[in-house]
Length: 230
Ligand code: ADP
Ligand code: MG
Image 1: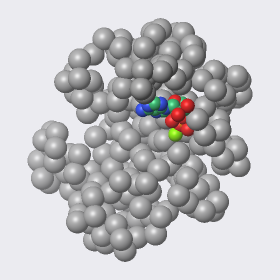
Image 2: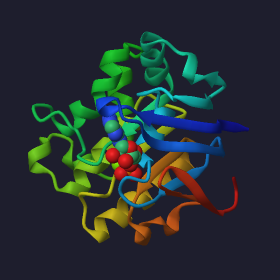
Image 3: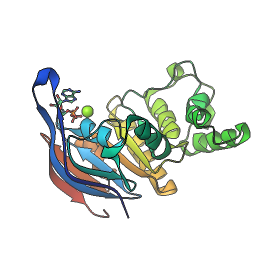
């Protein structure tokens, strides 16, 4: 089953009324439960593409379907609801809330959606702390954690509401090579365990060997697809 279908997908920005073509018409399909990487140099359109898939921004041309929804047609409010129900985000700079502990950061999206009792939330958060391997760090604040540990917290936070899709825009850019590889392997393990689709971007070719499918972007165009299973 395709979770994402893009057809002739285009995005231009108009700073100072001059058109910047960030995506010039890209076509791809991503199956549910796959582990996909978009690779390309800085400025090739990776963030733009992930923002469109995550309904943080709208295409200026073509079609984009995510989880059966034509996301180009959503209003801002509908897009926010769609994100809350379907998408988890992991950021390059971790974006943890500094005054909350690791435990509280992971719990936070659940507090927002109010779908579980406090006992149910506790069970879910402890389960995720365990599966990302930082149960012993749960009462620490972000500044007391290493970069790799922070990104583990962020991955648990992205997964806590059981989204269909996790989007990670250069999640390893602020990590050394060893931690970067660890984070990619952890995302792969979580994908295998939960059957959640993971899409990450990177400009670092060294860390993509774990990806099942690798799309290469250059100057707003998809120039290659490597891998199978998708
Ligand atoms: P990447 O994530 O691969 O570095 P981006 O998607 O951020 O690439 O950028 C693609 C192109 O779009 C670049 O030329 C960039 O300068 C331009 N761009 C991105 N965001 C904006 C914006 N908000 N306004 C104007 N131009 C933008
Ligand atoms: Mg980027």
